[in-house]
Image (cartoon, rainbow, N blue to C red; front, side, top):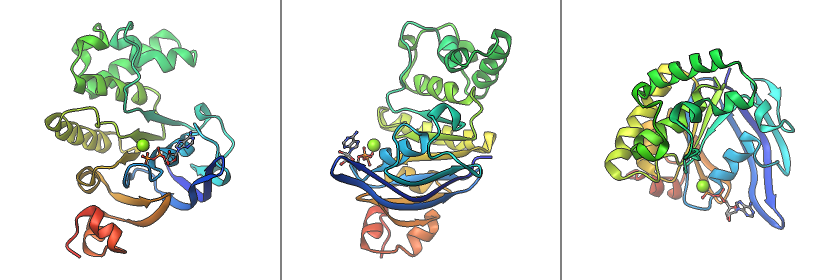
Length: 238
Ligand code: ADP
Ligand code: MG
């Protein structure tokens, strides 16, 4: 579970071609980072995988099934947003359980999953609080908890740490990496931050103007950048 394949994926908004042609293989359990400068199409690519945007052409295959036309909820993926998108009037417990409630899961099963996610994220003592009574890092964990309870085959993160201050960002990087180890679930993580990419990824996808410039491990990219753009972007000596 958790493999994602993009075949000749293209995306235009009106006249503007944002993703000219992307082929990509994400394997089960990998931590894959999409990195590239602002406006290069990272969020668009993630939203195409999530089903929040329709491809102009091409195919998206998830766990061996063609999901190109499938609604987001049918893809078995969970997206964690930058802005947290928490409900301020609901408790942490209700925020985390919200997607399960929407899908009609019985209360007892919901509570079991919330407890499990809260345990993993060290939120057990905060379940009665409102988002406004939490730190930025805790709010981010609630947003991740809301993804965990859905037991997705892959997590999709869009610059989840960009609202946090520098110190907290470093902590959350480690927390998300540890979460990946614990869950062993595919994670696709978008960032414009080279350090995040180099420290967190199993596999980095470097994007420029909607094109894949290089795919490789942090070490591959550091030792053998495909071109000057990649070298410059990831800070390799070449
Ligand atoms: P990134 O996440 O790498 O910063 P985006 O995927 O958000 O880049 O955007 C890539 C390009 O697509 C940008 O030029 C942006 O203006 C454009 N774009 C993104 N979403 C839309 C949209 N809904 N309508 C029109 N243009 C869009
Ligand atoms: Mg973006």
